[in-house]
Image 1 (tube, one colour):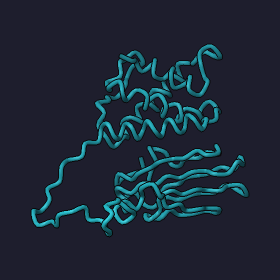
Image 2 (cartoon, helix red, strand yellow; image 1 turned 180 degrees about the vertical axis):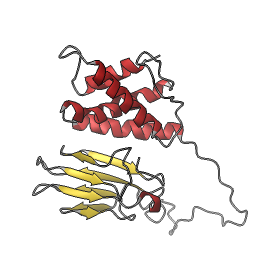
Image 3 (cartoon, helix red, strand yellow; image 1 turned 45 degrees about the vertical axis):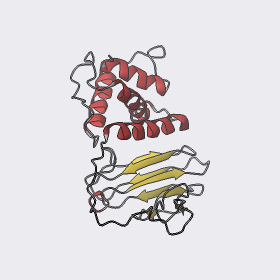
Image 4 (cartoon, helix red, strand yellow; image 1 turned 90 degrees about the vertical axis):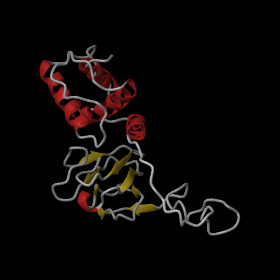
Length: 229
């Protein structure tokens, strides 16, 4: 089993901060532990995690959740060490988050009336599932953004070009978008920041905003009715 100290060391390795370069101070270790607790306790799913009080404590999560912790904690800690978040790390963090949600979110079976018509419900006779059934299937709806923009609940993939200036993308209120999710991606190669800002006092995974300037980095978020996760 993995201790909090080990998972923090692994996360720091992801952003190329290691004890070989400079010893991690007690203050830094405690700050990382607080960030670990904030991240895990803000998750909308129950992973079995309990708040860590000592760095020597063993994490109370299944092994398949540890990769999520390592990758996403690394992303959260990067700014504290003035380290960029590599695109590969950002993508891995997003993927492990999706994997975590898939593993821990259990869908309950629904009861259907016995009067439903029989058949696939397709709009033609070739029985191919089309955009009437899955509007966000393989063909995603892309919104191109080149100036400050407020996301709509009808959006799906928001691609942002910050080549001329930093751009702020504002999310709708989490309370009015419960269950809605979006992908927001920076497409240009400039160093201008893409700033993702919540509505009012809403939070994004416990943060007041998310900022990055890595080309191709994509953030996947969904509203749980209270905040964006």
